[in-house]
Length: 194
Image 1 (cartoon, helix red, strand yellow):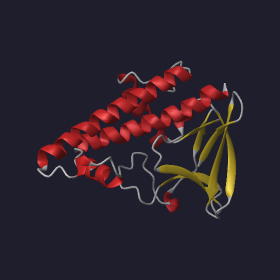
Image 2 (cartoon, helix red, strand yellow; image 1 turned 120 degrees about the vertical axis):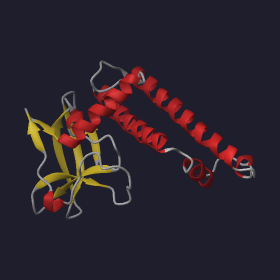
Image 3 (cartoon, rainbow, N blue to C red; image 1 turned 135 degrees about the horizontal axis):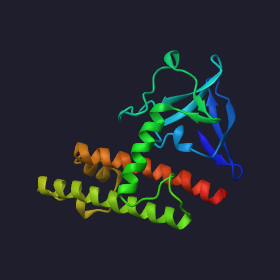
Image 4 (cartoon, rainbow, N blue to C red; image 1 turned 180 degrees about the vertical axis):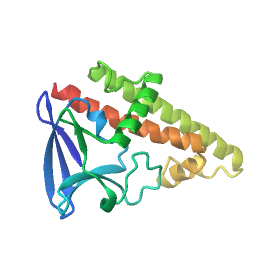
């Protein structure tokens, strides 16, 4: 799924079809949070047989299904409200993420913002993620006498080990921060497109 700003009013969304082709859709830029999932483990696909776009979940994703994604057989076409697509599950989760972002001082799609504001938002997310990771790393070092892994530069194996020490709340915070990050990437496209 690829989102591209065409002009000051219009997005182009390119998605795959069930027949493995690419299909383009054109949507107004306003209220993109009504339909565009901030969680990158979800994306739209087009059903050639049903002739509509629907939201799917990445096969390997084991996290929470906040958007209420179901199998194609039970899926309905994406609704529109005043010409703007609307997915109730996406809208509800995105509003929640934007409220959490605001509480952290991160700009949202509901705010007036520029590229500098978005950059500040990215920095805030980075600080939050580092703080959460450091808490997990502290738990690991307190739990393990052999500090073997800490003597080397961070590796994927070390990162996986540290992330296994995240609490459920920290894991949820990481998910939310990731969705805020995705929101900010959409905001960059909007700010650059204006």
